[in-house]
Length: 127
Image (cartoon, rainbow, N blue to C red; front, top):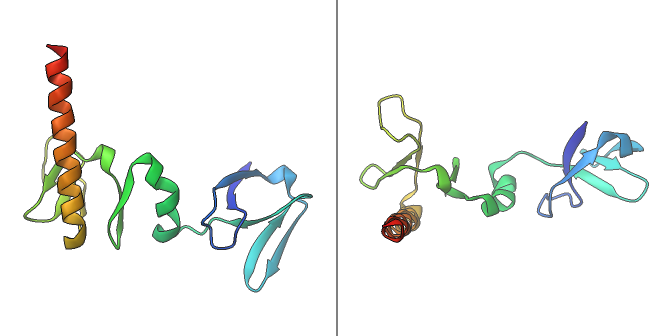
């Protein structure tokens, strides 16, 4: 079994999938768990949205407000008036959505416009 860890206690360095077979001891130090291999000490990944954000940006995830880390590649509709993004191709009362802070609305609008423009270019290239 593998466990997600980082080599720094603040979890800002790259995530490593540590094989539990490589652990020689697990220690608690200052209320923090540490995993020791023969060569290195690792810290468990603490699952907060702030910790996840830098690790997931390369996959298209962006923090749209304090509660949502959203994969912008999966957004299908942006409701600027209500500050919401949706993920379904057809919006219904049961559609999943995420809220957007006022500060992030401009970024989302620019991203969605850029995607529409790219889709138009792709469609024209196919003709």
